[in-house]
Image (cartoon, rainbow, N blue to C red; front, side):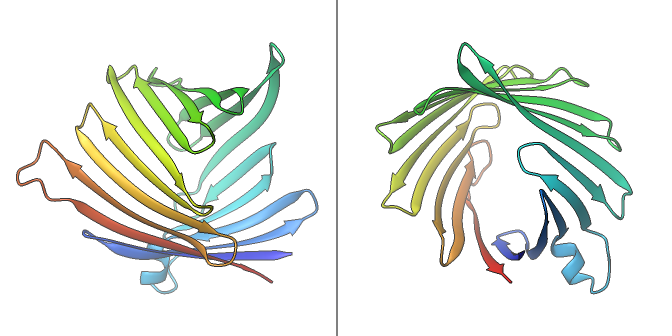
Length: 213
């Protein structure tokens, strides 16, 4: 089966489109992705990326213009009978190595962390879902010595409202998204930098359509 997706995005600073084409080849998926720069430049390959993915196991991305390869490996281990999902990412060109992990304590509680080996940056996030509807996500950034906070509220079956605040940059964000099996996904967001004067919100809208052939 072949799948394709088309993404369009508009915000107050720029707009663009992106596309993805994927083919199932046994246990792996072959994918080609192009961002807005490719469409705007006609036949240019400035934003072409080719990928080979085995879900839950590995992803290999090749950036055509940069001739750069990124490797990503996933695995799940058991810690005190709880699943710990691990992801190892190595970007060859930028020489960036990151380890991500998520410990699923129960359906309502998750603890995740991210560590970048080159810089030593580390982030730890806790996620708590209250009665299946509201999710609280505090996150601590050791490099910036600061907290980030996010609260999400599920509305009906397809809609989600999310508010976030970054204490280091003092950016306040609000997002509404809809994920429909029939109409694709749609997202509208607004953010305000409380350090700037005047405090003008930055608005953006994004929509994705999925096709099966």
